[in-house]
Length: 331
Image (cartoon, rainbow, N blue to C red; front, side, top):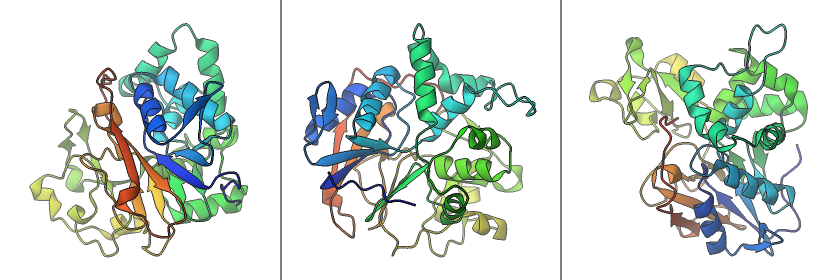
């Protein structure tokens, strides 16, 4: 697998989940020293790297155009997020022998997750179809000489097998079709890399998130070396109920969680709806999703040649007050 570095760039600006906050994105790019040249945001010697989830939010059409133009001009790179995948699968018909009308079923919840996108592209069907075709070309992960990027979880087992099978970091139409088959290699790869590690709540229990969504699972951290209880690995805005926090992880739980070693290259991802002041998780792990679409912050990390990440390299802007959160489903 080739490294994603370019000899043209002296450094990289890793940018968190944009979620349609295009006005805020433009402010952040300006803060980072990017300027519009022929309508495209560029930096004279740095490149932006987006961690996915440009889709969903108040200005999806504009944000997709901003980021795509940067990528196609070589001013940025973008990994696929779960919202890009969701849109792609929602609009892609199933193969004739699959029994699926679409790769992502048009349930009430799935329709709600893409409603804003479809509404904002109303009257621009050809433009949306072109974007969807482009989304298929996005990499699932990026490996640079000094750092790595994935939307939700760097699973070395799945990434290693993916590279062995395909000798690339992008998918194709066949892989997309396979990803709709529960339990398939493609399904597990997309699920882990783009959605993270979900562990089931014990004994069929449920919990209700702040957004009113009833869940039977929770999102788990993949960098804890010797986790013992559910509370040791929970990594989401909604904490576990007290009666569950001390429950022991099962052998199946432990087998499901990959481990990202502290000696591995720095890893950047988004996806997890953090809040407060941006901070490192570990000297080699940074989550850049600070809930921009929920009146939070749009966050970047300025990466140069450091071996260990530094708190001082975070840059962020608060979300513009005219870019309110309007979607009804969280994640």
